[in-house]
Image (cartoon, rainbow, N blue to C red; front, side):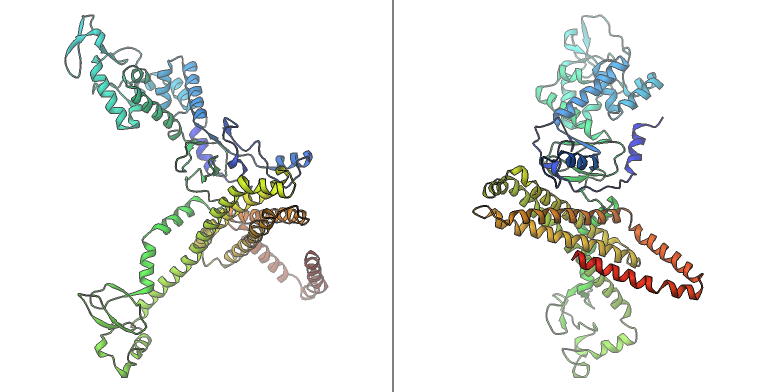
Length: 570
């Protein structure tokens, strides 16, 4: 029987073949449902009264593979799991909680292990069936920590029976809780005893503040120890995400509007894989780029070897104190040996001669490589960062559109807000496409340079998608503004509606193609190359006459047909 953890591991290796730019559920009222999913919302290019079209759109939408949970939902799920284990195994809720904590809140794992070896589980977890210490019936007992003799009413023990006074118990529990989540694995204070101390002892002896801390640790452990759930990584967000087994798309959107990858908890980065994202983020923060800049833009002083940047026009360099060595920037030779014979302050023939002799080839090669590497990285990083800024601006514009402009536009154009959904859809598409486009630049940076066909195909589909996005963004940002600021209804608004809806649909198609291509590893290039190779081999095996015939009218007709289609579409 396959364990629950194995099923989760299997799910992490699966890939899905759909793309969705729908972020509408990010902006729902958080009080609407106990469990947050995308079942009730639908942003599509459709009329509100067209039920058939709406049902068709919903049926084609991919089902989300995750659920966003708020604190009440987490508590309810935790209580339900404790009740299940307590009922099935016929043990107390306190013992059920200890068992679930030990097995990372996996109900299936608890059942499997318990029924396979109950005695072994009890021994490992510390759930004793009977006390290991038989306490006498004396009127007074001795505390095992402070060794004071106290009345029995002032002495208590865990399931093991080791007697300790209330004061020592309180000190022990208080110290453990204040030390952090380790208090959830509390054991008997006796060093030789493995008996577990449950929440009943906490409720009996801890202060109100300590009880709240313990309960908070217990609640957080339900998310942090469970491999199917994670907290939303957004600062200040208390929502969690339950990821369904079998989901292949790891991009998750919390109801706080933060999108992240469930697998690596970085920001959402589909279609780029987590490994590429990790390398890109490390590169953006690593000191290696500083070294590349130093190599590309500076040279070491020939005397003290400190890197020096050339900040003036002439070639006469003077190192900073205390070195003060004077040398030529071109050949790194002593400046005192330079004069009119070598070109004076602005040229150095000695460098060219030495370069021809191979004296500076290695250093120059390294410097040129560093410079090219830096320029290449800068190219991709600038576009990555620019799309990130554009996405943030689009999010702000979307928020302003929903909170301010839609109502104003509805009044000025005499149109119900429900019929302005196409504007929200356009902005949501822009936000999602900016995110996808941003990460395609990280993908492009790590695409091997020797794979020319793949790079050419990648740049083509990326360019098509980016071009479509720019048209959509400009239409939503600039052309919409004149209707927002207008005083009354405009005859051009219906044309604008059709244009914006059309651009939204076209842009979505472009990005579907881009995402599909990248998630398939640009496999279309390999298949096309194989088809071309097969076609070439077939042509070689065909006679010369038939070969000529195949390139005659058929070819020219195909070209003519293609041009006619293009002209018509334009």
